[in-house]
Length: 68
Image 1 (cartoon, helix red, strand yellow):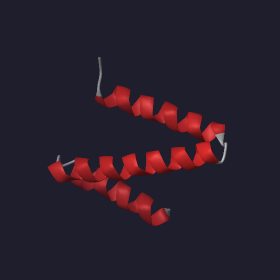
Image 2 (spheres, rainbow, N blue to C red):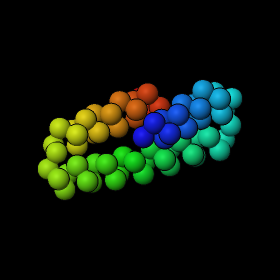
Image 3 (spheres, one colour):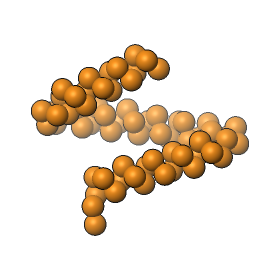
Image 4 (cartoon, rainbow, N blue to C red):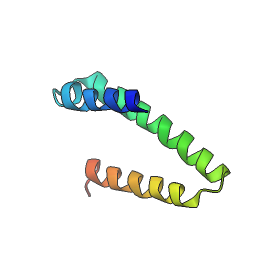
């Protein structure tokens, strides 16, 4: 987990900040895959609080990127 977090921090602070096109793809695919797997396993294990947290996080991120 620490390695994944360091990688994500590096991506955000350097490549994403420079608006490198590939950084958006890398970050969104990695987080998207994590979101789907984490939410699915949490739902399967009946950890409703984590499923709810993931859904709220998704809505918050969506609002930040796609303002109405």
